[in-house]
Length: 536
Image (tube, rainbow, N blue to C red):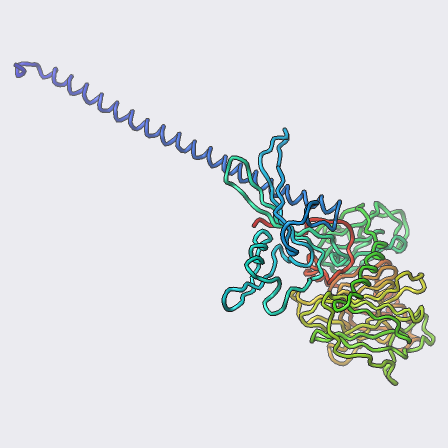
């Protein structure tokens, strides 16, 4: 029946079948592509939503840090969030707070764990972990600390005990959680009050102001409550509390609070300059001195010396975590010098040993309050190895004439320059380099240089060397002085004068390890701020 059908009939039938098959294939391909596109769009939306939620929980965690910064500004000694303390003495928390959006809708929570000062460092706490054997020193985050303590771990390095690092830093961990989801992120921050050791140079001279000469480089922040003329190279921010001032070192009109006489300021202020900024309160150091005396008088933790019965004390630091102390009985006479020579007589001996190998105090504070006479002083030198100590000379309640000074005529050195060693020197009056100080023009390299590794603070006087004319003797001019640490001075600092007296080469190097961890209980400059933070 079909064999008589024309060939065109079969061609039409085959063509129609091929078209249908092609259409089906195209529809399948289009459907697959649409499914893929919808899948990719859906995945992208889910990923965007997840990223948004991740950002949100990080914002919530950051809000927790900012909240506790605000809390400490209003109650600087409260580490329990204004409520009953939860947890042990090493960590408090958890404390949970709701987090709301701009319409006051609760969208999540932040949870806080707070480690008080002296326990944490670098955002973590060091523990001696006690599995069956052997003990292992570990570092844990604040949120994990209590569980480790409950397990039987102990604070501090294994075999060394807990101790207090003398820091004013509060470690806060904040975990952000978002509602209707499993996302959470945590931030660990160190909140602290910056110390005077945070600056390469910090001054309070609003009369003579501050001048940093050509050839001088500074690597830490520089600040003066007065004006600053800076002709060297500043690798960190330079700030002044003044908008303009009359620079006493040259004539003409007023200058900017921070200025230079170099042709291109960009070659001087490599990290910028800022003025005016709020002044730093040097008067507040008086309160810090009282607190330091209290720390020095704590039995078994601090060291305190009262009246010497003579001209003062001489402390020599040792590399075995001890110091020697002498009573000073004879110093070089002033003679024809315009300033006291402030140097212990060598021959005959001008000092008597009182005690040797006195252990460094556990809280790091040696306080000397010698009220034998108005002119008693503390001489200081030596070297430490793996120690952190702050030495203070002050007479609490003194008149200006009774304020105490520290004299450094011989090397005061670290052994380690990795942040392990720290020396703080706090003088109620001045930190002074005397006449017969190291820095000869011949002999060994050590004899030709006076090296001071320390954070220096002179509350009411200055850090520097008195003026000695050639009539004082051959030591009126010296060779090299290097200060590695920081300089805090009420009045303009200086170790040389324009007529050539003093140190011919002056190296002022900032210790970067002082930024976050100053010497024990070193005086502070203001209120709490965020010193460091990182995501855990």
